Length: 106
Length: 407
Image 1 (spheres, chains in turn blue, cyan):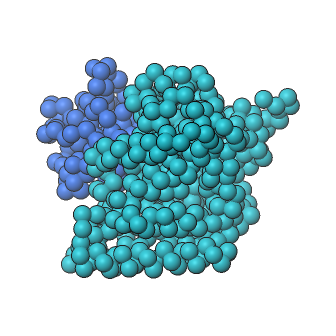
Image 2 (cartoon, rainbow over the protein chains, first blue to last red):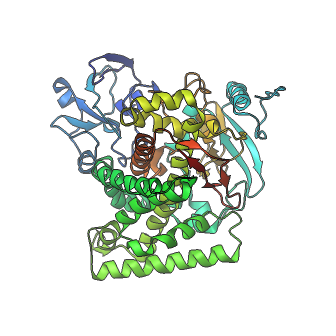
């Protein structure tokens, strides 16, 4: 079972057991993790599931796609090198992923 | 509060006090995720009550709008569904929807809207200056809640200032219940003609506005046609004027009716505006003192194939819609759903919907609502109600047309 570690801007951390095949966004929304809105449901049209992906997980997912790249420019919090839209981070079985939630999504 | 309470699990239920409505929904939600109802128009419809089930439906591409768009099927709705609304972007499905929405999304993204915030603050303060120039009773709707979103959306779209008054009328007409009145049909024809003309002007002489960029957007060497741009412009006008004005009015009205939450808000209007705005969207309607009923819903979808949602089969060809009132008061999602709490942190309400059809202008609506509520209470902390609100019942969204206030 994959696990996601969500760190809030205040440093507090929450660990959620996820289902393989779900995204980091879906896992957050289904478990009420604060700070990840995911308003468009994962179709790359809202930029409200922005996260900073831990360096150790950088190679665990396909690189930023063209549509994701455009939407990251639209996010409320300034993007950084490790910025991802968490709807694009689909979890494999057994994966442990660490992400940090930005200050604002809206 | 009413003396006698009949808290059942039936749906729809008639208007009851807000407290009774919260209790009623609690039992309903415990009983089942959705109810099949026969709408006065367009036949049967699953109305989804539970918040999680609603999000599942809204994020599932097996629910589409095509049969409504083509006219193959009548939209199940409490009133005859206005024809005009079927011509908006809301009724497109992927891939056409994706293509069109993508073009406009960036113009109203969280980032772009942050940049527009200072002009919203400046315009709100201009409106407040005008109100303060005269003592006595003022109509908050006409003097503040309506002009602010009209100004913001007109600037975004590129509608000249001199034409903005017309939009107030057009925006109400677009929501006309029955849609049968001659004047509203004429208004819609006027709006379509006006927008077509404006698009033509922007094709010739582009400016720095959304219509210009749509008129010059290219998808695989094909410029968007007017028939593709109009549904985008229409949905922005429908949602961007009338609905946002209603949200701002509801925000001010609900705070004016809750001494406790208003006192709290006044301690830090800018800091509290983000959570307060979400709480107004979720629950503000319950705080205005009006009885609450249920039975309405967001625009329906049709299932392309059999889909199981929260244990309930929605069969291929059946229609389904979300009920924002009960999904926003689901005790499984919201702690104390009946409590108006402007500091509520986890607030995944569905007032602006979810999924690929979620409110296109959501970031803009949120920003205007936040600015609208914080600026007026910062400048006029002694604001108070000076009479009853007036609403139009012949318009789908039943917008408030008058809210007498003074200080």
